[in-house]
Length: 474
RNA sequence: GCCGGGGUGGCCGAGAGGUCAAGGCGUCGGGCUGCAGACCCGAUAUUUCCCGGGUUCGAGUCCCGGCCCCGGCUCCA
Image (cartoon, rainbow, N blue to C red):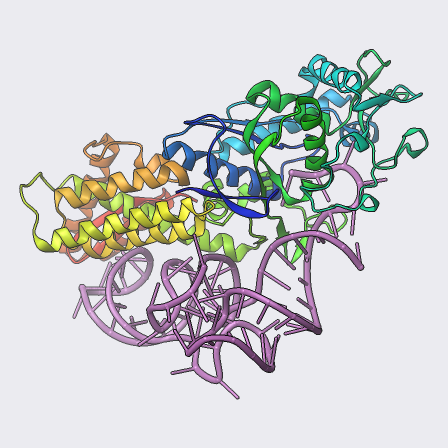
């Protein structure tokens, strides 16, 4: 039974989608004013893993992750650099989408704020009409927090004194009212509206886009813990006030922050790690594996050490898959299983069961990873010692199953076990020639071949007279 | 100050009262014996889970007190 930690209730809840068999997920995406950084990756990979597991579990999942392409920071940056704000948006949107691709994060819909202005205006007008918002003298529109009694519950801020927000206190009814629509300032981009020229407030966009793509109620709203207050609190107020249905979101899920040397990432600390830089040092799949095998709610520490660890882990996984594929070429179907084979098979099923049990437990990815490594160990120590058709094929199938969540072994598993590429045959030939050199004790040439292949990303592993090879990267 | 998260081996990190504390990295030893690498086997948290007290037949896990770290508290994933 799948259980999920809901920030709103602060407890683990049995997962039951609003609509049976379907799961709708909305994740707060970036404001595209700068390069995507590893903190973003933390959240995006986490929800990608969650989404992939739900699909593995048989749910039909829709994953929406927005792009905030108009906001104070974009405007400020454009002004500072003397560039058109749309250039800024295009440049960093491109960076963001490329990073997602490299990290194998599969998002179904990327709605942009600027493409939903009419829907936003419509939403704001309805809030005004229903008495939840008011137009200020400047033409800005504010949400009247006093009309929403449940304010503060998501973040645990039940005292009004903890609700203060934003600027323009002079024209707001209360200091904690927040902007739905901001009247135009000189030199800023704007859109016409019933209340005058202006642009959307930050919080309204997510209410609008989530309901457009997922409906008035949906299952999972995700983001980092830093968004709980005020952003998610405000979103909740907007949508529940307008729709009058509670809960608007069934499960609020928040990823832990990612730190560098025990501290948060920030510009002032100069410790932000842009993904484009990180990918120069590490294969993006190494980064993905690191993030994909951490529980989504824990606080993560970024360091070379953890990435080197992930690198070793990825190599180990790849080696096992390659080994299985090589073995698959050698084994043939058989009839009955020996007791030993049955025992190994059972242990594989144990690993599978542990994988699901862990992921069902609030998406405990680190526990699931332990199960993956258990399978890996079985391959190296048992399956390879006495390769049999069933064990080899079942192990491969299991890796494929796990990889539907992990997403780091696509290329390694890309071909069916029985497929043989010309490059495979060529490598086998080279290995055969090298074997003959070794027979003649021409080790110099044999080592030369090994070294050259290694620099091409092909690692040779000698074991007695037999030599296996795996493809490596980086 | 308020709200919230955390404190487990050299490092990372699991662990809803009972399974001599999962898994990974690293380190050490051995094997596989041209060398290397990969892999396999073994070892690696005992005044044992930040400190003190309590509950219990039994606590890392519950309760009380204390110490320490981190995040949010006006648009930061």
